[in-house]
Length: 256
Image (tube, rainbow, N blue to C red):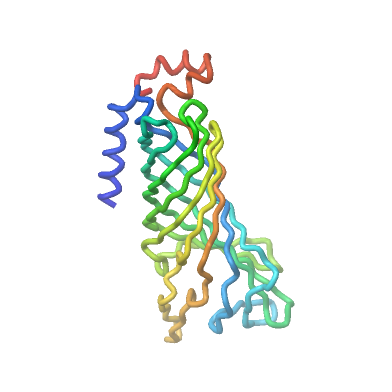
């Protein structure tokens, strides 16, 4: 965590020296992080207490593991003087979601289980486009290292609308990698992320009250996909140049 703090402090210090630069500037991004994940495999240790007693669960075959979250970034942009390529490095907060559905063997009952992961990451981006500074229109690709901070889980069963939730203290991978491509048009940003591994520690062993050892995440699927739709804008004079009223307001704010 101390390295992330150092990086954040370094990025803020760069803001002071790049406020008026057309080629070196900060940008902020805020938006939704839409998660799509495959169903896990069959886990012989997955049971559900139903009105008819404890029953074995199996993954539902036709369930799209969709779960929304959100994302927030602070990027430092280093545009090349040719104004057709550049590099961004940032500090990102991600709220990821992974959703799964299980059914009893006889199909009488089901349960939707959702995990929410909080993570901070460092994205490194290469962007390109013709004369993109003025219009902020460019395509990009990159990679990101994530440090996963915490995980929570909630479950909703088919016969009851009550949602049970808990913070999960174990079973989370500390780190993950992601790769992405995206497109930015003015203040609209869309990005497609691919996480080849899993947020879950598949080797994690949980010992039950009766002394039985189980591996609750052993069959969780790899290869997760996310679509980020965001508002993204430079923090220098680019945004106020697009709005006269906003420019008058931002003149009073010394940070800009």
